Length: 356
Image 1 (cartoon, one colour):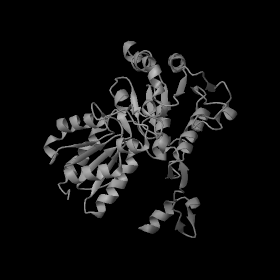
Image 2 (cartoon, one colour):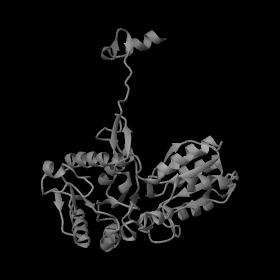
Image 3 (cartoon, one colour):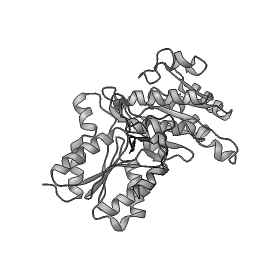
Image 4 (spheres, helix red, strand yellow):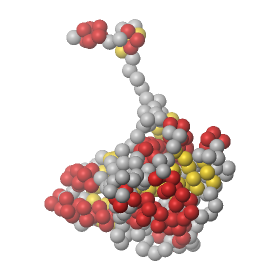
């Protein structure tokens, strides 16, 4: 049987009568480099793509995300702007309507509040208000959520804000592969996409497989990923906090609690199906987000689970969120306001009724 199969295999795949099996080479990269490579490849692939924002060109970006792109593509496609978010956001919306694919960088999404009218009223609503005739293929990207030591006005998570808006797609990647694949999908999408990064993730290192390094590697928008399988409790998070969720799962495993960790990846459209399927197995749920609790992403997930998976719940859903205060500047208060891994561990123990 095997010999008959081997006769059909092309000679180029045979060496000394042995089939060559391909192994994927891995490469360690930072999240910063993963974003940069995705931008570079999409700029090379489509001449309609351009980047605009404060310090993105000659300074190589405030966080060096756009490093080298100005030298490679020039000032017509990597465009520095004045400190006027409302201005360059409006230009981006108009350019997208005219057939280009702008990538608008905000130095932080806290500054995007200056441009909220363009993002919501112009970008998100135009396709619907035009009866489907006008598209707005634009990517709004930049760091979101708390970094450290920058105070209340630079530390807010906007995932729930943008996630509530029809007409927007909202993604919040975690790993290097997430950042590459989701950014490429966002740039190629005909809808406006809010692409939420984390400043604290930029230096995190991940391994990319050969497949994930491919120029055509895409991660579908709207699909969560199970990062760790478990059977006792489901922990759902997105962006940087996925690292804490995995760390919490490792601590719980040492105490005999098997936690399944879901990397949400997309806030809108929300992948409720993946969470429901996990809940059918674990019957307990903990949601984790760096934003505030009221009207947050965890609140939306909780409502969806009540609607679609109530009969599978064996315990109340636990929501772990940032403290319900503006982010303090003092380091000791900041640490108390931000989510710590132990907060997630404690919540998982409460829902599994194993809190000692």
